[in-house]
Image (cartoon, rainbow, N blue to C red; front, side):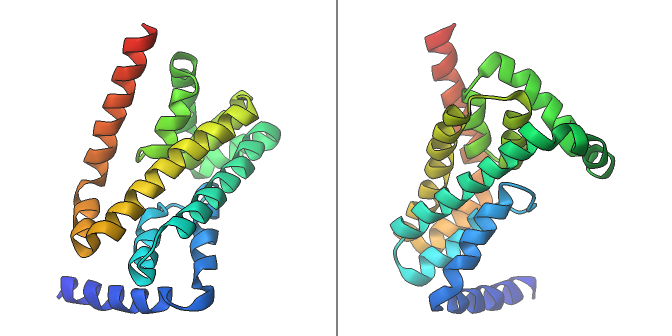
Amino acid sequence: MVIANFRLFYKRLIKFCKKKNSKFILYFISFIESIFFPLPTDPFLIPFVIAEKKFFINTVFVTFFSVLGGVIAYFIGNILWESLESPIITFFPSIGESIKVFQNEFSELGFLLIVIGGFSPFPYKVTCLGSGILGINLLGFIFFSLVSRGARFFLVSFLTYKYGEMAINFIQNYILRISLILLVIILFVFFKNYY
């Protein structure tokens, strides 16, 4: 019953994604996801790729708006954190803990942490906010965000475009594992080259 309802919902979603101006909702979601929206952009991107049978332009725009939202979150952290810290930590204690972890990890990993935050299941919004709080170089933040968010969205889009329904099932079941494997590879290469 649940699977049948999901499939019906998904077919309606694909139909909606074929509408001319529906892409702006996708771009808006990718923008706000980088600031506060709790769901990742990927599940919203997939039906657009399936509906349009192409992926390149949408993925470029999704990446752009995701990083643009990330820059807004960066500035929130950089400019407004002192006045917002208390209410944010009161209402969202997990964000406070995540930012502390980010601050500790950045001193060890540097910009690699932005790549990890942009590609992995770790919330990108925390990476952006933490980068602003620490005052990380803005151009470096933007560059590594474009690389990591672009890699993530292009991977999801390409697999969906190439393999359709099979890719959707694969991504839903294994995105966490794929991200963790790639994260381990990135960390291995980093530590091998720098330590």
